[in-house]
Image 1 (cartoon, rainbow over the protein chains, first blue to last red):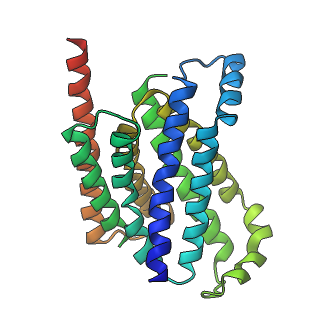
Image 2 (image 1 turned 90 degrees about the vertical axis):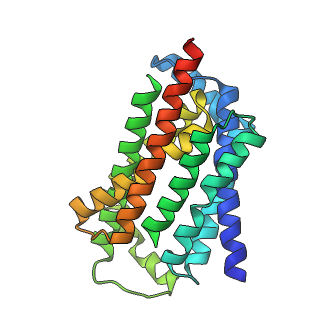
Length: 121
Length: 134
């Protein structure tokens, strides 16, 4: 039960991490330059973006939860379960980031999730 | 840089990074087994940090994070996530080639599912692109 709760935390915080990173990078804007001066300005905006920092924070929570749960459970149990974060990512993309998620992306997400689960079992 | 080349570069960098990390950790932990007494592994920390493969792995994964942010700056999350999952396939194959890890039947099925999933998203994206051009 305790493991289940921590695995849920890994899945949700991992997905939230990517969702917030995506939101932050959309605010920073499309990176199309390779000029050093402009890249440094972009790096500055990235490092001072609240959403990016929130995303990195969520990923840190996911990482430390993973390390914790690995002390009690086998990797072969934990890793397949974490593939569920791909589904949450796509849900977050549709409902929070308001992306246009078509059928192809849904089918792809489900296949990738099942595939990662198989790969890790 | 175009999105396609960015995606391919990110997948290559992430896969090589993970395999190098695995290679380094395996070199350092060879013959060491403290079971679940996780804290005992801390004594390996100095040799882990000094391991070239491990360091290369960390550098590659930092580079991947930058590429990941660059991808998210110009493409949808619901495109970037499933497509970069191809790294899982490449990691399994590279781990077999470089670290001689075995791939089980179940893992081959996983590789097939991920590959088809990435292709479906990729082809859907190509169709989307044509629609927008019209």
